[in-house]
Image (cartoon, rainbow, N blue to C red; front, side, top):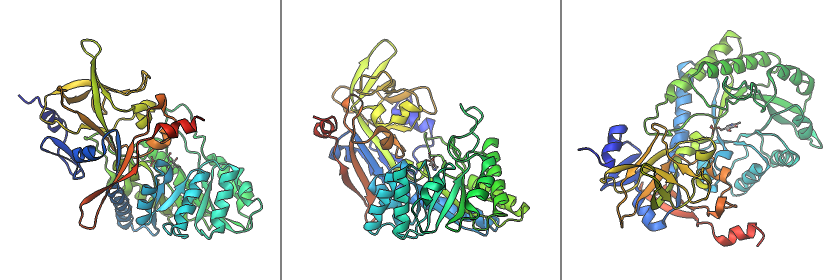
Length: 463
Ligand SMILES: Cc1ncc(COP(=O)(O)O)c(C=O)c1O
């Protein structure tokens, strides 16, 4: 009878695959034996596999460039990394090695960029697309960056007041973008995004405030679809509206030469996830080209700001099961040695699911379980997968440790949980280990952060 955990996974998914393999009943991730990591560093353990980042950047560039070649597109593709998805220095340093441009969201982002500039890792010709609502500190930092010699800083105006703030007591000429307030998906709580300037106001605003101001040059239109880049009528409709507006504006604004389509390339949240990235890139590029041709307008440079797509699949969170609790005849709880709410906050906030696998004991029979976190919060659990309403793990045996992994969680989780800050029930932030490949292609690991200490938390709390 096929009732082992390995049978379940092999029957449910295309498994093994390029990323996940099993040897001697233990899981390997990108060729890294995870049990070795656990033996060396213990759990809970947050792992970052850097080579995945490079691969994603190269893949997107290839897809957009191929798509452009297919329709004879006469402008360039620019890959920006959206810093808010992970600000860790090892991520920023890795993306910059691959020559990406940067998208920022708030004042401190610019301080990070200054630090990377001082260490020689960020070049002053990098495009820095400054999104987000601009409070005075952010405005000042943007101005400082321009003064430092960054010639491609593009503050994207999120509202009609920001330009005046940027111009205040500031002499140099600079470029700007305008964010279009896109329509939300029909099932959303609102009709129009609160981010950006409404469609009908953009041209009058440009004519009134930018057209005759020699200090400012409008370079970019920006739109971002909250629900991501999807093959839906809604997405194509929004793209069409944005490109049509671009064409209309280009006729009165010769400096305008770029369209930023934001982030939103999805990532694999379960093993049978299917998404045709090549088709989407081709369709986006072809539609932009076709609309521009119809309007007799030269096609724009295309910018993307992929966050999850860049860094999501490089992250894993490993836990051990510390105990098993049978709470009634049907509900069996496997308790992890950390908290879902603090280490994977999206599981709680937006019901996000991740690729989830056992790390050892693949030859054991499987059982259905609920996974519980250590906080006292009744919401601190994980008991359904993206592809099913249940979670299965190898059956627990006495004196045998069980380890589990959540994969592709590399984006947003630390920013949302406030890594190293106060955590729910004071469950400490986990150890962080970074994996890279050496010149021989062998993996090497480095401890980036120890598990959070009680002292650091007490200090924040004023003790
Ligand atoms: C303006 C903007 N660009 C890019 C992104 C990145 O989105 P994703 O991580 O889905 O690629 C976001 C995410 O909120 C955003 O608001």
